[in-house]
Length: 68
Image (cartoon, rainbow, N blue to C red; front, top):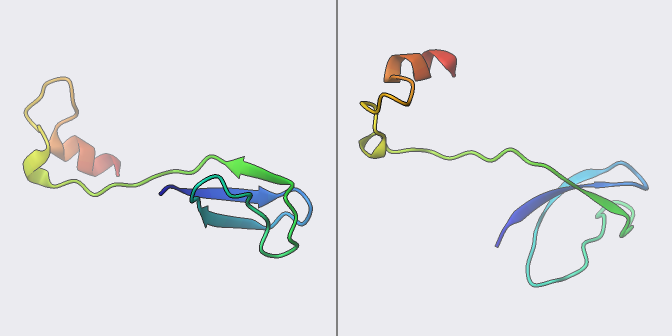
C-alpha cells in the first residue's frame, strides 16, 4: 500500500496518507477534499553486496560516497 503526500488547498496543511483501496482522502485538519497530491522523494537502503561497483558506466564507490 503506497504512502502519498498531500497539501490541502483550503488550509495549506501538508500530510501523508496511506492509500487503501479507492477511498477519498480528506485533510485531517479541516476535513476538506480539495487536495493536491505532492511529488515525494523516496529513499532506499542498498546492500553493498548487491551493488556493482566495478561497472564502468557507474561512478566508483569513492566518487559516490563523496557526492552524498
